Structures are given as structure tokens and as C-alpha cells.
Length: 215
Length: 289
Image (cartoon, rainbow over all chains, first blue to last red; front, side, top):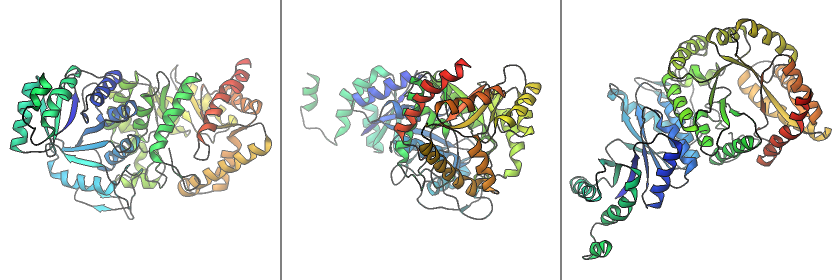
């Protein structure tokens, strides 16, 4: 199981930098960033964190609603390039926009592709008029890593190591999505790295191993 | 942040470079660093300047960031506001938003808009942006409508790099008549400090080639005339000559100078050297006058 940490109670660059560094030091995989009142644009936050730490993955809640998907695609491409391929765009439909979600995600994938494209969709015609469009810059790698909210990762709240372990074991038994997004305070990351992640890293642990860790 | 046919390079490194340039600008005591926006062009010129600036903000401490220009009519204004609020917060309040109309049909068409609607879109979106984010704003352009818009809404103006001191004088006077006190008059200027005439001339050739590509592809007609404006206005030469050009702009009424030292054909160490020379050789000449 792999771990993305959703920061709580911080809206400063210094605080986010601490989170990113603690994620790295604890052997966890990355951050999950959503819009907050103080920092409503998580892709901007991701860009800043990308400069502050050059290792951790940056999963970003990307809500598709009123905005033109081409604009979203551009921002993601820039963050992906600046972070050297560490962006994970976690897509969801904003309230009232479920009907357009498939078309919006198709448009994102075209925009991140290698060729100029056009889309004559139900909601969007790209470009208006004739011709094709190429969104630039390109993604860092072959594509932007794209998830759909709830599909690749379960989302849980930290309480304590034992509770987290039980919840994640339950999640894994029900539907093994492979990734966990854990909303956790900074102080919990060491415990997640030491006590929780190793216990979930393998399908089965040899008998006696966990007792060795605990002693 | 471009990878052009003349000077290709890594997109990823270009954001590192921009952050490094910002740190050098900060180290030399300049107030701010500015970057532009373009979209849907082969060279990948940054379509999301606020994100590039968030990256650079994390590697700097107090230098301010400005956009020259963010193409507001083409964007979702609520999203621009959210981006601005976030960058401003993360950077510790260092954002200035320069807003331009945009001039490329392709950029508007790609997002289902018409360039002919840009003035109306600018007004609508400024309304939304102003109510969501109260930080400093600069309206780009020199046409009467742009100046009137800036004055009416209480913003500063940002004038282009093609504008001579002579033409700036009238524009600045008109703006001062219309605008509230405290409205600033910024001017972009291409700058390169090079006392050797042969090397200065070579820089001018490269500058013309850089602009020729843009003008022929984007600005449309009369490339030679436009290139003439660019050439005449650029501050290229030894420190005294550059200072003279900048002094003329100040005397004509400009309150803020945005010096452009970075082009696709100027290598990173040269950009850093230019930043240092602007501070060490040109500014003292401007201060003594």
C-alpha cells in the first residue's frame, strides 16, 4: 500500500514544506492537496511545494466544472513539468457537472497528448472554427498521471496508529485500491511511516516480525 | 520559459531557471520579477504564469512577482482569483497582477471565445477579480481605452516595450489627468548592457530575429515597421547609453521600469550578469541625475 498525506491545519508555505519533508523522511509517498479557504487553488500550492521538495509525489484534487478543461490542462502541464513528473491529477466532477465529466476528461487527455487535436463535443468545441490546437508545454513524461476521485485511493482520517491500521486493513480486504490518502497532522507522519506502512507493505508478513518491530 | 526553434531547451529546466533568475533579482535588491503568458504555441511559452511564479516564490524570500501580462479575457475569472489568492498567500503577499487583453485569435478560439469580445470580457472579468482579490493590478496597453479602463478602476498602467519616451510622455500626462493619485505608470523595456559596439550590434540582430518570429506569426502586418519600433526603443549599449534611455523614460513620466533581460537566446549566466550590471553600473547613473 502506498501513502499520500493530506495536510491539515496549515496554510503557509513553511508548513507545507515541513509536511513534504516529513513525508519524505518517513518513507511515505506524497501529499494530497485540495482547495482550502486560505489556499483555494491546489495546483498553485502544488507548484510551490514542488520547488520546496524535489522528491514527494503531488496528488492534486482537480475539480472539473465551469472552467474550460483546456485551461486546467495547461496548469497541470506546467506543474507536471516544474515538478518533473510528480503530479497526479485526481479528477472529480463539480456539483451539477456530472454530465460533462467524461467529455472534460477526454479533452484533458487530448490536451496532454503528443499531437494537435480538435474536439467537437457536446459542450466544448476546440478550437472554435477550423483547425487544430496544441496545448503546450507537454507533460514531463509520456502523460500526466490521472486518477478519478475514489477509484485509485481510499481516503481516511488519522486517529492513532492502531485505528489507522485497522481501517486500512479493512479497506484492503474490501477493495484493494493500493493507495491510501490519509488526512493527518504533521506529528503523525513518523508513526505512519514506522508503525503503519511496514505492516501493510506486503501481502503477508512472516510470523514474529511485528513483535520484533515492537520490542 | 520557452523552447524555441532558435534556442531549444528543456521545459522542466526552464521553471528551475526562472526560479534561479528570481533569486538573483532578489539578491541584487530589485523590487520585482515579471513574466508573461502565451498559449498554444510550439515553444511552450508558459501558459500559467502564476504557477511558474508559485514555484519561484518557494525559492525566494521577498522579491515580488508580477505578470506582464496575464491574459484575463481568455480565462475563468474566478479561477484567476483563486490562483492569485493562493499565490499571494503562499508567497507572503508578494503578488502584483498585470492584466492584458491578448491579441492572438488562436488563443481565444482554443477556449471558444472571440478576440472581438475581448474588451467586454476584460470588463466583466475585472469586475469578478476585483471583488475577489484586492492586490495591486496593472492594466496593460497604451490605447485610450486601456488607459481609461485603468483610470476608471483605479489601477496602474503597464506600457509596452515598443513605446518611445516621446510617445510615452503624452500617454503618461493623459493618465495622470484621469487616474487617482497613487496610480503608477509602468513601462516594459528590453535591456542589454554591452559597451562593445560589435557585440551590442549582434545582440540587436538576435533581438530582431526573436521579434521577427513573433511579429510575423502573431502581430500580423507590417513587420518591418513593428521591428523598427522594437529596435528604436530597446536599451542596448554601454551603461551610460542604457541609463540615458531609462532616464528619458522616467522624465517622460514612467514611475516603474520593468527591464526585460531574459530572452530565449540569452544564456542563464549572461542573464545573471546583466542583472548584476543593471544594479552595479546603470542604477548609480540613474540615481545621480
